[in-house]
Amino acid sequence: MTDVAYDNKGQLEQIQSGLLEGEQIIAVYDAIGAGTGFIGLTSRRIIIQDKSFVGKRFAITSIPYSKVSSVSVISNKSWAGQFFSSGTIGITVGTHVYEIEFRGSDKAHHVHNLILSHAS
Image (cartoon, rainbow, N blue to C red; front, side):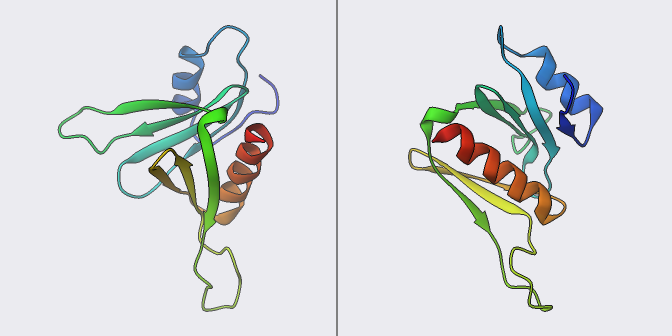
């Protein structure tokens, strides 16, 4: 479990509790914005917690890397002229796009690159 990047120990522990045999955690990042609680990346899949359901219900969605058709860094050119100032990625699976927003663009780029390296 060394070298696992994570923001929140509780989220990391939640991912750990659902690992498959031989599966390793790579990163678990807190997400901001509507619905999403966090994204976890393992050696086998992407795990997204979605808290947008009514009441105290939430979903944990597992996406095998082989099902990802594209991953995008979504950004607006900031007023300071920097590209990728926003920390949002889009993960396309079939016809659905999962949009995850992070605090800072470095996490978005890390997640983007990890998904690309496992999906190709």
